[in-house]
Image (cartoon, rainbow over all chains, first blue to last red; front, top):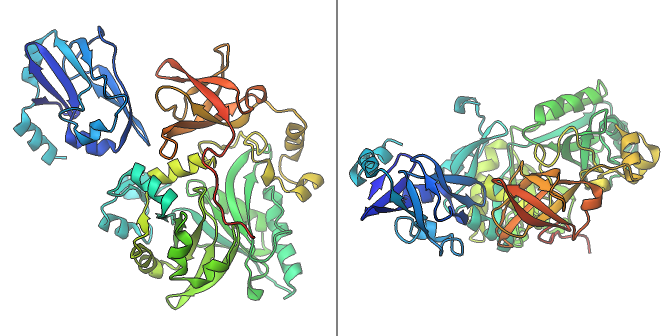
Length: 121
Length: 385
């Protein structure tokens, strides 16, 4: 699993990567009450908005950590948005991207680097 | 505004000790939520008792300088100083009663909404207790002091603690410490002894629930807060849930649902135009308000149920059946009690009746919405039997 400074995670397998937000992000967001997912087939560049999560108070963008095409979305999430809080780094994934530039993964943090980054916040 | 510029309340340290997430609001450093989070805090208040620090607001007193000792004459005299800048009948307030009213500009636009109370005690006739909003209080205080001129002393009391206790168990929680509150009905106020001093307790609030607001000397504020929190029915509630609670209760928030361009009639606060004042047409912008009441109205505050998709938040466009933009959302979010998105905003009168089919634009997409009667969640005030 690789991480961004915006608190997204990426788990790549065979050129396809699942995207979600970290436990730290889920805690900061508060109780998620609504999730908006991208459409399958959409192409995004690293840094583009990918999904939206909403708490009681506010809406927050989830950014694509890497470039690619959306090949699958987590269809269970809109009906159970609280999964983002209960299992952010597992069942709370948002979408899977077919990577258009796998080398972008090298620019992301590993778990140890992300933990170090969190300790500076 | 930088963090250094933020003011604190007598309870700021208590919030930190409770692990609150703090934010700047109305110039003060305030708790936005505690460990439970907005959703749980909201639901706790609806079911039990929520404790809110509202010390950032603007409590104050207007005191007639030369009192005759005749209660009615003194009350009439102090009321006559305030009434020219508001639309409420203060002269007609009974002892120990509170009125929700509006400060208006010369064009009849709303400068702030506020609570004005006539104290109950014999020694406090010719005195008004006034509580205004945090973000507007410097301007409000200047306006009220100017209206009073040399005939009354304007005294701000915003160095004190102001604690709101709201929810169906609020009476039990507060009465265990201040027994006098059991005798209060909605929108009445009393003095009560506490901690060697005096607190001013009103049965009022801004959540739609029964509850109280307690004005307490700064030195006793933390003691009272902690004492209230010892009751397991009471939990601390941050500004996040305060906002979602008042939205469900259909109560407008100044700076969002109300501003200087909006009139009381447009804001659907016609009840705040007291009958005596309406008949006398002696409040700021009376001609506008009378015209609007007679039908010359271009927009009205409405409640919206968002029937699909994401919550529509402040600033979202409201569209009519033909897709044309007819207004904007002024407050919106997710209702924890209803489990659905709700909003308030302004729409033309012909589209402002319950049942009207409208749309809201969220991130470029139209979502169906319907005008509903406010409040979204029924008020549970304890009115006089």
